[in-house]
Length: 207
Image 1: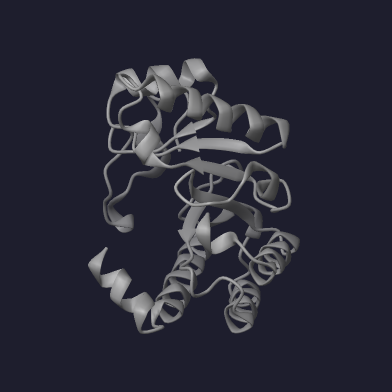
Image 2: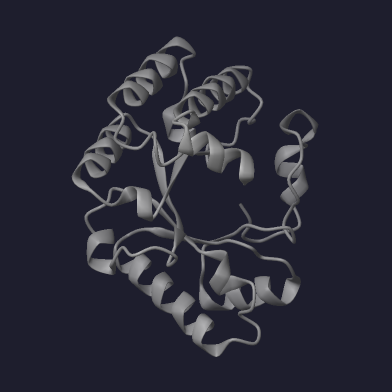
């Protein structure tokens, strides 16, 4: 977190984004994601990259260079970074290229549900601050239900972040949330060491 904050401050984050994007596309070209068409790789974009025409051009160019199957790539942007006309146009162009889009940390910023309707995102990722204590916090449970209901009404899928135990996973499944992410599902590890889908075979709805 400290490293990325400093990179953002000195406008270095887009360079990091480009490095991650290119190496991910190289990895995809090697067929590492497997043959399942419903399996995605997600890439977080920094706020500095959103609305940047150079970054957009880079993504389009590098996608063509490595013949990237854009439908299997989901680009994540934070709620606060998605606010503004430049950001919306940027996202529309990415969506037109065939990439999936996710609105990360939803609920932590200041976007309204009304603004959400105008964004071409496929996934709404519910901020972990509402998920980590949903077993004991009734208000947070209702907030998650509300996000899920509104998301479904808009034709978007929902993802709960920060899932750390089976009880939370069970509650989310009962609520109808589409996907779960967190240490209970899998802890971060080097990509080259991952066994991919075999790691998740025991979960009914995990991503």
